[in-house]
Image (cartoon, rainbow, N blue to C red; front, side, top):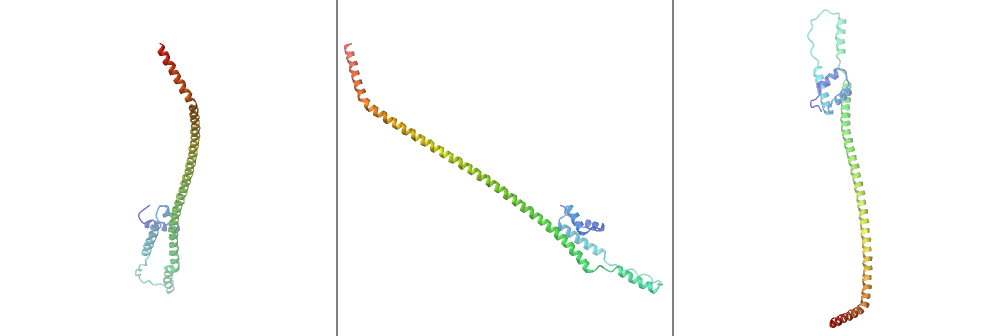
Length: 201
């Protein structure tokens, strides 16, 4: 963005016959801010008012002139040098101020719209991330539920196997209780036979 106030450019473009709106548009294209344009146009107006100040007319030697011609010559410059009505000047100034105000408002509005768009974009990104997080949490919850269910099923199977093994052990105890006396008696008899055989040898 240019740092200086483009007073000379405003004066040059006015000499070229450009209107205030065209001058504002050209300066905005060159990167000048509305504040710089406003200051430049005000200072250019001040310079124009200084340069257009009336200067005293030099004393002219009196020449023998027809009274009718003298009257016409004194009236005509007065008509030509009559300044523009105050209303037209005010209208021009008001129009220029309105154009500059509209340019400033447009610039601020564009900045505001850009800020709002950034906020909306940020909101959409946050909502998207929250949706992804919700989906991941739901997946983890489903996986945990499946894992918990699988663990409980395994524990149930283990309990069933332990119960079956306990039943088999009890059955074997009952069998041993029935067989053990006979087995003990047979072992005792076998020991006596072995003893007798050793004595005979």
